[in-house]
Length: 191
Image (cartoon, rainbow, N blue to C red; front, side):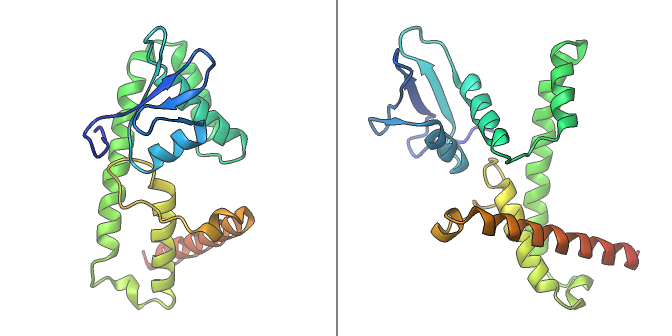
């Protein structure tokens, strides 16, 4: 599923010989972080080399992912990265792209259904003390984790104070993880 901008087209980014990236829509230069932001906002981008016309989109998307991973923003477990490397050297290479695309589509659909179901009542879990607070935190966590993937629920709203305090974000995520583990333990006890 392709997400397009207001004009119904992909956002065209041109790379000049100087390696600078130029946003053809707004007529200004952009950085990799700007491109990552466009994507998180739901835009699809196409990055082309101005001189050769070569499509560089995949190369730059991989570079964005590598930069996030190198800053400790790990989304891809080592096992997954290892399997991806193996896929490049095996017969599975032809199957892996379709499998990954289908997996992410299922993840987006599952997230949308879960977000929809979390808002519907009655739910026997709502009787547990603290459930509403955990539900709100889980929704915020899911939005933050899935907001950049097209087809998912609404995008996370970025608050300036959250963006300026990464240690607060880490402690909030740790707290959410702890509460999710507690909820999982309670659910296991119910079953």
